[in-house]
Image (tube, rainbow, N blue to C red; front, side, top):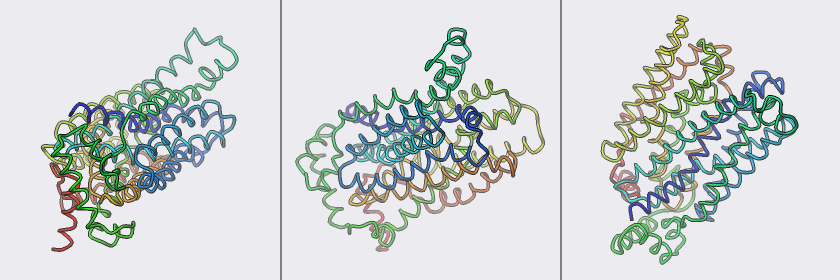
Length: 460
């Protein structure tokens, strides 16, 4: 039974893989696209952040559509977006056309970023829900890592003797405009994700919310025994009876604090500067003294560390808890950002030292903010409006990401590298306060118990 849940969680987590892949694959294309289309820093930022605007659009519609049509059906829609975007980017004829396809891919990311962890949380038992939802973040880091390897491999291939004399479309995609091959490579994982989604069942909690009690029970029986399935259905019916519908209930009722926590946590996770490293890593590393080829190699090392330290979260999130991971992680993130800023400020020409603190930053993010945010967002909202509420909170993730993606070139040009990293460090002060003073611990609690916690807190 446990393996069955894990298998379904892994399929849903592939949405995270595509999220990470789509986010990171662009890092190897920025220089090529900037040169080919003669982009200034503002247009360079738009090329990066256009997908993020699409992501916000995807998040906005995903919640309402998933509450109405189901988590599974809208995840399938995200798979279609990913595939169409990858193919379109590879064959786009102009910068504007490229941006349109990046927007479409962003919509796929937006839908998947909200629904993949939400779906996993709704099928997972309370005792290992944190670990299963954290698989989503692990998939993101794997997607980022595979994208880095893909970029490095395709860059090497474009300079290989086997293709140097090629002509026509092969030369255009793999040599003279290798960014097309980089962006188009996402087609393969997108199609795999799309096909596997037809295997997963509909969310049992969504089925129960829609009054399809027998279907919900039959789905639950794939993971738990009959007594546990009946209890799950009973608990869902119990919380539904207490809830008032409409998104207004989240902002004004007993779940107002949960909504506030979710939005702030989501926004603060992005102003750590994580995506400045993911998107503009090669540019930052080149400024630190590395050549482009070495910088792309440095990105691969960053990706490996990102994956390895996410396993700490999978290992500890269900017994140590969500809050301790966040506290330790935020402290480590702040210290690393300050040190990176100092290295750039004093122009310390030691790329190994710079990489050490960048990797420390990545490691701290990977076991804390990275997985914990998605776990908390997937579990703190009431069932009746969980999709819509998580849409709002997830949108805060992408508003922050869009801001960082658009503004990082400007920050690096005007605040310089040291000022940029120190700005991110300052943004971690409210994150530390929120984690220590406000966020409740949710480990080991069912989604219905968490919901009742907010209801009880309102009465006290």
